[in-house]
Image 1 (cartoon, rainbow, N blue to C red):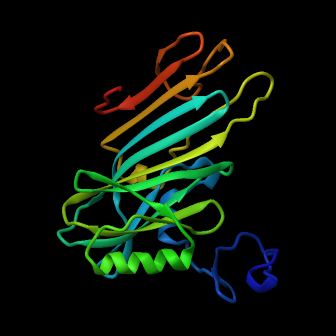
Image 2: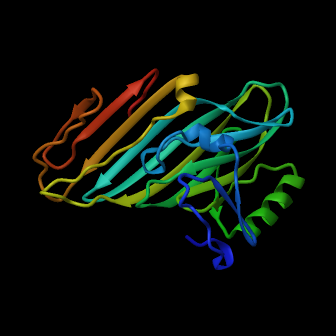
Length: 246
């Protein structure tokens, strides 16, 4: 394979972890902390991670709650995720939010809460994102800038993350669900080492389907769900903890 400036990279020896730099690629000896948080195939993961600098070390913050709303209209799926990350320390932290998109998805929205106000973000080119971020940070305001990190990974710089508080983040993506044998499948992956170590305080997934063609059946083969079904608009809910349906 080839890296920046068409420089060849030897991957015949098996799996390698590489970091792309301006003039080539550097092999990593250890798995990055943010990648450890996902611990799965990127196409199977939907849980973001927020890596903060705590006493000079990069550490993933605990996920507090994770709420997912899915709207499928015919074959177009729109997934909105709201989740929080907990700063258990007394200090104000700065971190990087990483999010792996499904391979066939595209970003359509991103934002962070400042107090009780949701601030929507813009997706901009990497260097421009860094310049804007540093300017906003120097003014002691919450930046909300999303940056493509390569592959299907997006990232955002997050500051400030106040002590003993939760940073709330919202991200939305869309994808086309291909039809095979008269049906289509939507999947949402939650496998993560972060969840094994620190179970979620609250988890909910709310899926609504609207179809111009009458729907014969809707199934969830992996989890028990509550279902409201009409001919054109089935509605499924999976949840643990506190959940309020709109």
